[in-house]
Length: 322
Ligand code: BT5
Image (cartoon, protein in one colour):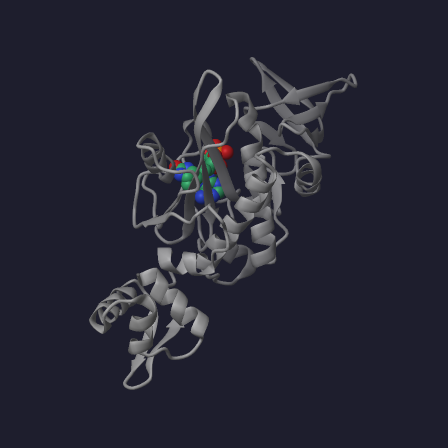
């Protein structure tokens, strides 16, 4: 009901009387009063004036379910959405929900993670209200070998959301970082549970630096935030809704596959292509020129002898970035 009240007030852009609200929502005036009180506690600024009713003046500055939903245009991603104050890792939390049968499209957000994860057991730093930690559950009808496009398509969606909403020129550092200039703004981690020939679910976790003005010493040379890049505060709830809109567009409309226009757009936004890269094969480090990303999301690297090596995982060092 709180979500419906916010939507009503948001769409009206004017005072709405308690009677009008109780009529259109089919609940008592007392129930409306109570819900408005809870919404105020969540950070919505709602003015109440006798004989005029309620006016929505401001959305909360922090992540809030009702606020995100107010801006959301998706069909299924984020329709079921949960905002946690604090959690160890949104990916781990969502994987538990997935094991209990949660439906595809559910999104978990957290204002703070105490054990945010990167790839290969690395840490993702996310302090309270400074960033957005978001995890999305999908149940694509794919074989385990076919999910490799989910991270690149999510990266494409993130770039579009950031460039549109924050007016930045963000790029993708293959395979899972979004960078601005030479610094990392976003990290993506896709995890999967599968049987031999069928994916049970995937959880894609996205960590976005929003408000940080300083980072811990060990990452300060390579991390940046929207605040540092633009000098502005953004409406985090609106931003999340835009991200979810783009995620649905890129993942669902492209059938979880990096082909056609999505592949072409990815190449254009990929900062790794055209640069000298180094990757590991067994115990050897190999260098070459990154030339393209193929339809499975793998990086094609031209070696000095003219042959192409296909790199599908592990770490790639890109000259000139970090
Ligand atoms: C990633 O791993 O970049 C994936 C990060 C995914 C985080 C999201 S948050 C929501 C969801 N829940 C989780 O628990 N995780 C996901 P990787 O490519 O391995 O990069 C990790 C490295 O990035 C670290 O070793 C640091 O060097 C650096 N790093 C850590 N925190 C950072 C931050 N806030 N900003 C920029 N760089 C950071």
